[in-house]
Length: 113
Image 1 (cartoon, helix red, strand yellow):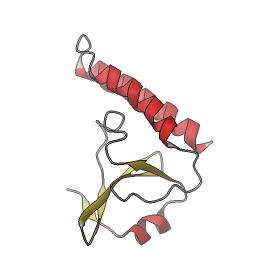
Image 2 (cartoon, rainbow, N blue to C red; image 1 turned 180 degrees about the vertical axis):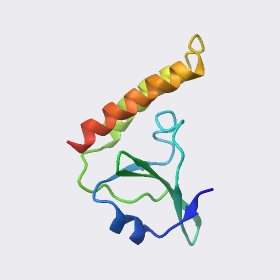
Image 3 (cartoon, rainbow, N blue to C red; image 1 turned 45 degrees about the horizontal axis):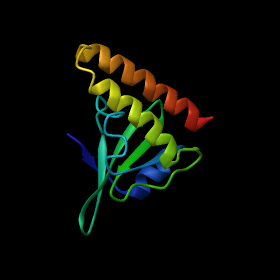
């Protein structure tokens, strides 16, 4: 179960943060589990994933990126590749998951250099 946390707490716990808009990395993050979320007056704001010590914040109101070079076009490039893998039903789920994990690792390397 995800814990409800404040954005302030997440900002203080992570030196590197990646901001991703709502559903912009759905396929890329499909096998990852968010460990926490934040809410606002209107309701849910964003989910938080920890990947190799980097915080990924994704949702309607995610945290701003800190010490990373992520942008919409870069996320889209990796998400499009992950979506193609996820919709290739000639592969077993384990094969898909392995390839998508590799893509996620490549994305993380690119944005945290």
